[in-house]
Image 1 (spheres, rainbow, N blue to C red):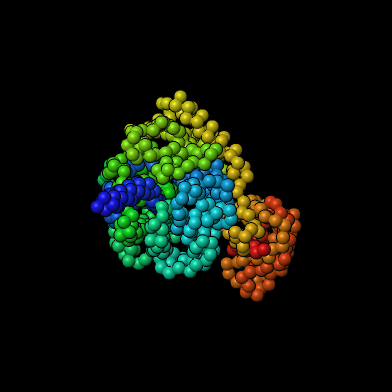
Image 2: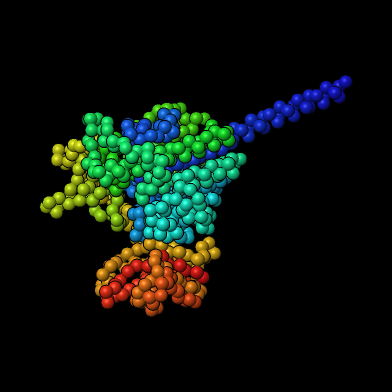
Length: 590
């Protein structure tokens, strides 16, 4: 009898031990993280923020259930915002200061949130728009993402996105994308394609913690959308309900009104896709343990409803840099509620590191600070800090379209006045959130204080490593072969005797070897001319015949290991005169 009792007790104890182990495992399951970002969707392109025309029931519902950052500040344009999200730094310190002309390449040496979470045991996926460099070592698969499905350049169909450029007004439909570095022909509207890939991703990775960066390229131009979404807004009075809100009204035109209808249709399409995506999370039982972040990358690209703020994409005024930011994690975040403390894109990395329990790499210096104490209600505010914003087509231009914010006071550099002096405007955002009342004349001491902060920041940015020496693609590795150099990542400089700027690429040759170099054109050549290819101090020449070709090749060319400048010069005969023009892209195979 006693042996039976002992056996029974042993079975019970084993069961209790098993249960305790099960509980322990459940308690240590890491949360999934999904960061959703849209492109050129402004603060006002949501029903939640008062837009009476747009239909966004899914995003409105997400906002109503989330912790919302009332003032979430990004860069005025997309690539700089994305660089700061990935690295937790001011974008210029990573090499990113613009959206094209070589200004949207993030140094491969930067440590990204994907790399940090991957080291912590996360699967990492990136779907949609990358826009931080299209060649090794700057592609998403080089920067910590296990799975990638992305387009090139800053947008599908832009000139740098050469697989889709020639489709012109249909580039958003059936786009050619890059899956894990390989070209794939997709079927459907781009937002639908990216959502389907995201649904497949969470299905495939549901049994392991994952970080998914779902980066829609819509509603960025070209404003292409399925007909049924355009039809939703084609007869909508875009101005209805806006003028009498007691807020400044943007100076819209008939053209921008038509653009608004298209943007609204594109955003509603995103909203419908997110309904499908969130349903998949729910069906898989992932909602409770998945942090969903929704945000946009900058203000709207043309005048439309923006909740009364001044400025749009490209401007450091609030309309250009203030975006929605919703954080939904029902497991521990008490919601809905608004956080009034200003936060920024570079805060995402340290927040996710703290949230997931990952380890910050040693000696990694970042600008951002963790927002987790605010999200978990451990603190009501964070230490006050200075937030700087800037954008121009070049490295910083002193005091033009640059802002420095300290607390609620914001100094905006607006360039030169009529006397050639640096001009500024000063706003108190606590009493003037729409930046209508310039206080600079009555607060000269505060202007001087904030200008000193701005100057110190500009000094740091102008001398940062990757601004002084821009990131370069690396040619001749096993990671990328062939290498396609596109126009988005090309540099431009004015050269004496050439009517257009010279287009060139600064690259690194990984090792001395021979390469085949092919210069591609966007249409068949129907006239004669010459093709010069400068490779450092060496110039190669080929005659161009009126033979309908779209490419010309230089074969078995030896390139020495090290830094190299590649510059094509194309001269085609037009009305009896040779005219300088650009190639489409350059292919280098070794």
